[in-house]
Image (cartoon, rainbow over all chains, first blue to last red; front, side, top):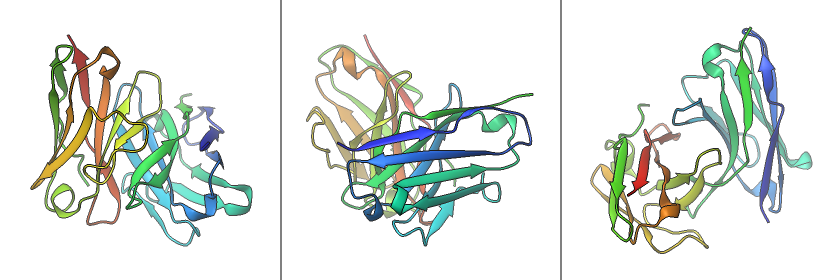
Length: 120
Length: 110
C-alpha cells in the first residue's frame, strides 16, 4: 500500500534551518509529482511546493519562494524540503502529498505530517 | 494566489444532505475541471474524497459527490453520518500552474 512518512521536524530557533524528508513506498515513486503542504495550528491548508517526477520542474508558493527549497532523490524514493530563515509563522505541521487523480492535480495520498515549531 | 472561499461552517442533522461551496475565479475553479475535495478529522492528515470535480477515489463512500458551475464548485454529502463531522477543504489548479486551497469548512452533525 502507498505510504508516505515525513521526518525531520522539531523545535528550531528563529533564523535557523531545517530539512524535512518524506520517504515513499508502495508505488513507483519516479512516476509521480510530489507536493509539500503545511497547516499552522488551528488554521487551514497551505500548498507550498511541488516537484515533478524527474525533479526537473519545481514550483513554490509566493509566500515561501526564496526560503524553501524542494528536491527529490528517486533512487532513495524520497522528497525533501529545506527551510531557511525560519520564522515564528512557519510553525506548522508539514505534510508531503502525492500528486494524483486522473489529472495529477489532486493530492491522493498524504503522510502523517511533521511538526515544526519555531521558537526561541 | 488568494485562497478559495468556503463557508466557515455547515451543519445538518443525521440523514440529511448538506452542500459545501468553494468559490474562486475564472483563473482557477472556473478555468479548469481540476477541483478536488479533502476531508480532515482532528489530528489527522487530510484524505482525498473527490478529484477532478466529480471523481470519487476507490473506497470513498458514494454519499460524497462533487459538481461545478462557473466559478463555484460544490461538495454534497448525502445521508449525513456522525463520522462525516470533520473539516473539508477544496483545492483547484490555477493559471499559475500551481494549486490553491480553500479556506476550509467545519461540518457539524446535529
